[in-house]
Image (cartoon, rainbow, N blue to C red; front, side):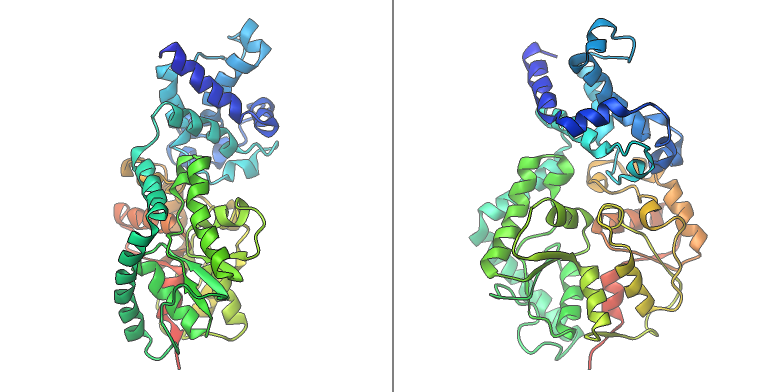
Length: 416
């Protein structure tokens, strides 16, 4: 590695070393409590894929360049030089981890592995070693915002097809436009994945509830966050924030996308609108009697996978279960669940950035969890989890139906 590049990367690392990150790097006692908490280690037994194994790749650089012990006795804490060989280890650190934070809940010091991963991702972006599929998608999202008028017209044409499907599926369910856009003063701005499977069920549910809503032009998912680029993350979420503020909406409702919810709920700062998930909205409609579901429609036992970004990182545990219990009398939880639930192995952009073989290999504990329920249907509330669960279903021949919660609710919707 040329010295200029090395110095540039070390400067990027230094920028990330705020007090909390330094504490996370300093405080690890190698107790090993986090090791068994990681689904990748629990599935493979490979220490490289444990939380401490990944963090050590950054901690050993920190030891060399930011600790006195690393300078006078580098062997003591295994300090290492930054070079091409170690950058390969850094890649392994960042993009074999889904960012589920299960390890953090087991660590006696509450070390946030994701904060350490942010150093790894900054180094990879600086070295042009970022996963290109994620980078391309993040750039495409930003370009969509920069070419708003051109993309708006194309989106409008696609919406006409979607409106036809919504009208056919739930005739007479809305007094006006069945998929409204640009509605000033709407109660709800619904941020979908900008695709039919995400828009149709939500439209049916909100129309049945008589909601005054507006569809966002933009997709909810934030590939800049997966990539670990704070700049791209902000550029992507700001398009949607500006849209919400221009329309003067009361609530921004995020579709079933865990990272999108985490960014909008916890990163954008205080705004004049609330941010909730579609699950919270459906749960509220049910409690207020604004929608009704036919329990006879969905057949078979249902189980639910808690998406890490919505559940463990977002605290949304009961709302999806309330929705499912309104759908069926045969709901069974996985064990463990809620905060202790195992990650599906596809989050953090790994569904896009990582090879399927790796995702299947590191998800055995999730498969065992699902099998133990005896369920016929596994459902979740995150598109990334949904994609991963479908891959697990195919690869492990589980013979299940994999559905999003909003899909099940839409299927059982009673429209007078």
